[in-house]
Length: 331
Ligand code: FPP
Ligand code: MG
Ligand code: MG
Image 1 (cartoon, rainbow, N blue to C red):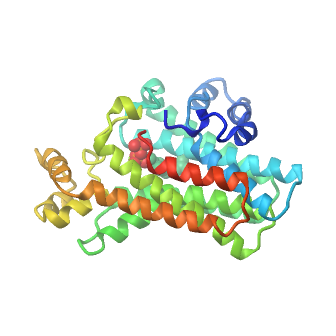
Image 2 (image 1 turned 30 degrees about the vertical axis):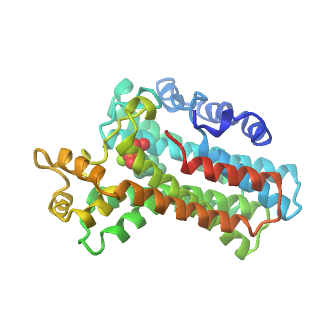
Image 3 (image 1 turned 45 degrees about the vertical axis):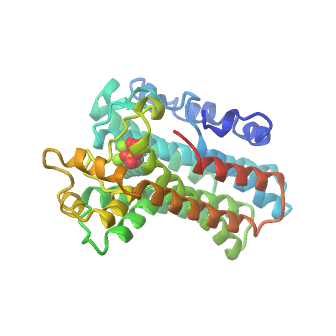
C-alpha cells in the first residue's frame, strides 16, 4: 500500500519510464538453461515495490532537467542502470534468504523454499552475471566501476553483519558502516551512475551520491524499526527476525543506553534462551524505536538538502514526496 507506484498523479511520468522494467529484466534472464530461468525470474513478477529503480529514474530525470539534457540514448542508458540495480538487489535478497533461512518474501514462499538452497544460490549468481553483462554493454567505464563497487560493498556489508563483533564503543559506528554497505551503497552508486551518464561534474556527482546515501540510510533505519513493530503479513516476509538472527540494530543499540543489561545479550548475539524476548521487551520499553525514527528523519532531511542543489523540476518534487513517503512507510 505504501508503494509510491500506485499513487495516481504523483509519479505517472516515472511510471512510464519504468513500465517495461520487469519485462526487460525477464527477457534478459530468458535465454538460459530451462531450469534456471524460472528461479531467476521468480521475483520479477511486477509485484515488487521497485523503489530503487524509482529513485534512480527520478533522480536521473531531475539531474537531466538540471543540466538540460534530453538525449534519448542517454535516458535509455539510465533506464539500464535502474534495471541493473533492481537485478543486483533482488539477487542479493535471494542469497540473503538462504543465509537467513527465511521462508517468505513479498508474500510468497521464498525461492530457497520453492527450489532449495543450492539452486537459489546459483540463480542469484546468474542474475548478478546478467546484470554485469547489461552494465558492460553500456560501454561506460565509470558506470561499470561504480556498479562493481556496489556489488563489493553489498558483499562486505553482509560479511560485517555475519561477523559483527564490535566493542561497545565501536558498535554504533560499525552498525552505520554496515548499513551503508548493505543497503545505502546500492542507492548511492546508482544515483551517481545516472548522474555520470548525464555528464555531471564531480561536485554534482557527489550530490547525487550523497542524496542516494542519505536516503538509503533512512530506508534501512525504517526497515529496522519495522522489524520490531510490523507483522509478517504486513511485511510479506518474517517479522521480528533481526534479534533471532543475532542482529543488534539501531533500536536495540539505543535501548542499551537506558538498559545496560542489554549489553551482554548483544555481545552473545541473543543466543541464550529468553534473550530475544528480553531484548524485544526492553526495546519497546525504551525510546529506541523513537530515536531510530528520529535518526532516519535526520537522514531524510539531509537528503532533501542535497536535492535543493538542483534546479526546480517536477522530478525534484516527486523525490521530495518519495523521501517523505519512505520515512512514513509501513512495509
Ligand atoms: C537484506 O537484509 C539483505 C541485503 C540488503 C544484502 C544481502 C547481501 C548479500 C547476501 C551478499 C550477496 C550479494 C550479491 C550481489 C548476490 P535483511 O536480511 O536485513 O532484510 P530482509 O528482512 O529483507 O531479509
Ligand atoms: Mg533477511
Ligand atoms: Mg540478512
